[in-house]
Length: 572
Image (cartoon, rainbow, N blue to C red; front, side):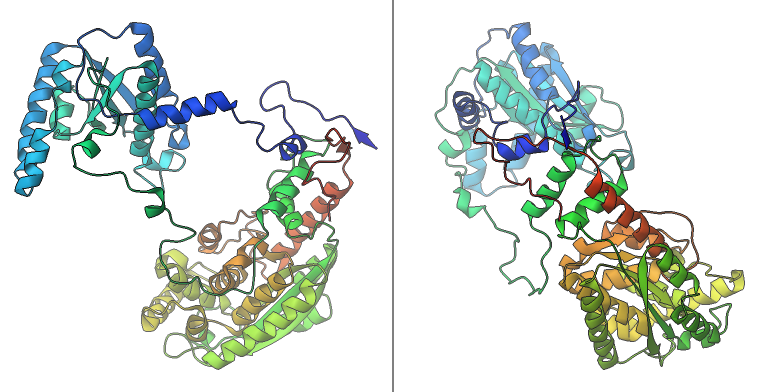
């Protein structure tokens, strides 16, 4: 049975099925589209102006267009200073004259003559000047999108200038962008406060020329390049992309998963982070998953001889034995989540990281291949949760994390279970020394040999193998996330198969998840290891998949023939 789709009274009233049935329905009519493109092609940098005033309603429409520009993080950092005062305009023109002469003196003689021939009288002729300023006083970290691209506020102001220019052209006004200024001098002329910068002066008025083409092109300064000269596909370099045996879900699968969720009799995104996780599982074609396996890999580590762990090596074997009997914490958590458990003894490392490599390259390669086979085997049956057990392996994980991500020992080393401040300092010294010994090595397999543990190499292979058969992989703590990171470095498409089960107490774990772009499903400050957090998250995920499968549907939109639109396939 289906129910009518609840249509919101505010916001977007369309459904995913409607959008799938007519992806181009948002387009403007043909005549309107042609007008937009005509305005873009006819935009010119105008240099000669009539003295006639610009009516206030026209100016207001142009400024509104500038204010409607896109801005990173919806920050709207632009400020429009409309200059009408003749004395300010004359001072600005004088500044531009001096800057033009200064720049010409730095050019070859012919280029200098061409620059001096350019008409800049618009500063004096145009009835209006509009100086677009950027208010940069808001810290970049406080604006969505500027923490990574700090100059995105300037780019946003450039978008506002483009909007002003196109609107002016549509109104029949001319506009010219003059940047022959010392920015600080122009800022001083306008009495701009500290932290506010200009992007130059825009001359605005009725044009006393109607140029058929760009002025600099007609003056022989430059020419318009063909589009194909500036068009690249996928990457700049001509080098071939590294071969990959894996592919992430295509766009059609990703969109179909979201479309199916839109039919649920519930608000979109009602399960929050879980909804996004379920969308990813459905896009992988695993929406019918009802179970899976915890792959619990253990190993012993020579680095424990350096006093980096509060527990003896024998605990590793004890926990693995208990796991085989189904009574260790991770195995019990797996059972509670409806998962089976496979316990794998990955062996022992030989070197202590600080003085010698943990493993040979050949041993790492063999462990990765062994893990691939396990991943393929268990990934074919359901989701795969990764777990680990190995006294001393938080030091191993921290060292790998530091080397892979270029972080310091201070940034990656945490206390670990049962450790004290003296042990913490020893761990930092060991990690710092181990990373320094490795030097600039960044390739995954050599790093796993130099700094890794057998269980890291094996779990890297498990992730690769599980992804190869399309399975969902649920990560646990720091070490399993480092294994996931290694797998992604080897095969980038693995990333689409990874879900972060939890964020643990380990210092570097949040950074690894951030580098992977994964938001954890749980944040319970666990120290347990053994895959327990991954199992808790897997149980939630399986429950959410059931909710997605069994929740009531709204009636699908059909076309005139009664057929459902593309992308409305059932959940599989």
